[in-house]
Image 1: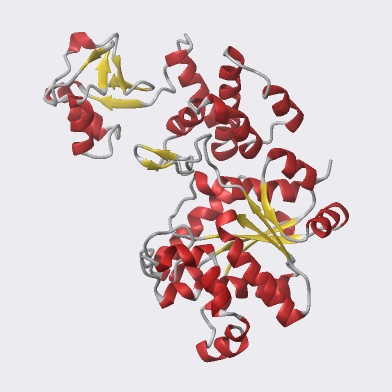
Image 2: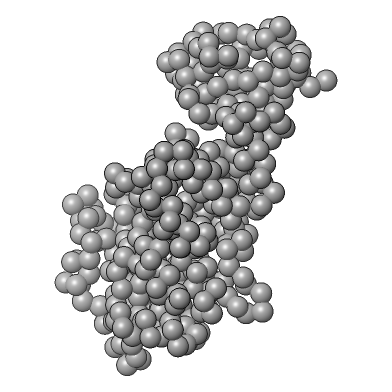
Length: 406
C-alpha cells in the first residue's frame, strides 16, 4: 500500500495541491518535504502530534523530512488561528525551546545518517536585509491576495499588526530557501497553514519556475468539532514535567467512544486494517480499544516502559489490579498530618493553584472512600491510612495515592 493511500485511509489529508502529481511522486520518488514548528514553548503539545505522525508515516515510506523550527518566524509570531498577537519571545527563550522540542521529535523521527534534518529558519531569516528582502521577495506578494487569506481575514476585525502581516512572506521565503538549498519540493502542515503554503508554492513558481506541492492534515478535533488535547490544567503536553505520564495515559483512556477510531488512525501505528475492524465494535469492545489507544499513544510519546507503568496503575485503580506502585503518588511524613489535606494536595501537584484546589474541594470534587471532603481545613488522621497509604479521588476519574514515608 502506498503512503498516499495509507494517509488517505487514516484520514490525514484535508487539502492538497496537484493530487495526481503528489500521488505519483510519493509512489515513485524519495520526496524531501518539510513541516514547520513554532518554538513558542519548551515542549510540544497534542496539537503538534498529528504533524509529527504525518512526518513519521512519510519517513517510513522512504521520504525525507525536514523538521523546521521557526527560530526566526517566532520573533514575529504566526497570526493563524489567534485572536490576539502572540507574546514576544527573546532569542534565549527560543533557543531553549528548540532544545526541548528536538528531544521530543527524536521519538518519532529518525535523524541519524541524514535520514531527516532539523533546521532553524533563524539561520537565514535573521541575516536578511529588509530593503533587499522587499525588492527580491515582497514584490511577488499581492496585498489583495493576502487580505483574502483566512489567517489574515479573521484578525482584521480585532486588529493585525504590520509585524504579523509579514509572517506570510517569511514562511513563503522559508519554502523557497529549502527548495533552493535542500531540494525540498513539498510542505506539510495543519490546515490553518493553507494560505501560507500556497504563498510559498507561488513564490517558488515565480522565482524558480518550478512546481512545488502542499498537503494539509486535519486538525485533531472530537466528534463535536472541538479541539482535543485541552484539560482542566491547560494543554496536554508531551513533556512529563508538564503533563504527568499517568494523566497523559488517562486522557486517551477516557476519550469519547465516538473518537476512539479517529484517534487510533491519526495518533498510532496500529495496522489500518485492524483499526477498520475496530470501527464495527461497540460496548465492552470499545472499552478495550480505548485501552489500546491509551497504551499506544503513551508508548510513542513516553516509551514502552512508562506506558506499561501507566497501564499498570490504571489497572490497579480501575481494573481490579493490586500493584499500586505506579499510581500517581504524593509522599508525606507523619508530621505532614498536621497540615490541611488541601495543602498536601497542592504540594503534590494535584492542583495547579490554591484557589482551584479550594474551589474543587468546596464543590465536592475531592473524596476519600467515596466520602466527599468539602472542608478546606480537613486534616488526615493516621487511622485513615490502610497500611501506609490512602487513596484520594479528584473528580470522577483521577486517583492519587498519599503515601506516608519514614
